[in-house]
Image 1 (cartoon, rainbow, N blue to C red):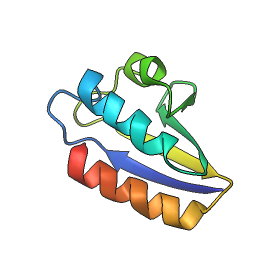
Image 2: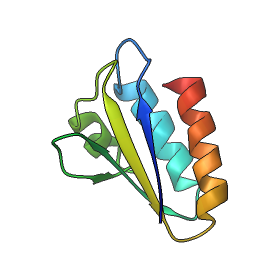
Image 3: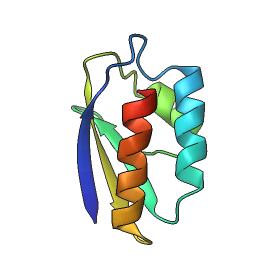
Image 4: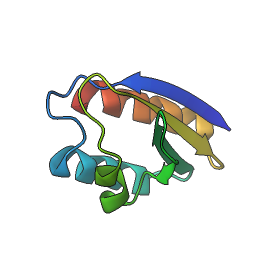
Amino acid sequence: MRQFNYTLKEPIGIHARPAGLLAKAVKALDSTVTIEKAGSEPVLANRLMALMGLGVKCGDTVTLTLSGGDEEGNLRTLERFFEEHL
């Protein structure tokens, strides 16, 4: 299991467009990926509505947890995704 934390820089947070991009990116990975915001339950990061339901805003920190598959490679892929899109 691998984890990383990320503080969102996207001014609007995780709204429809970035949530859709994230869900699509996660579906392409061979790891199970969950995402959680402090004080909330983790949700599967490949579920669009679950991502939007977290209510993540600019400045919020999320924790992503990866398990199974190529965890290290998938972690690097998601870190790049977050830096480029969120």
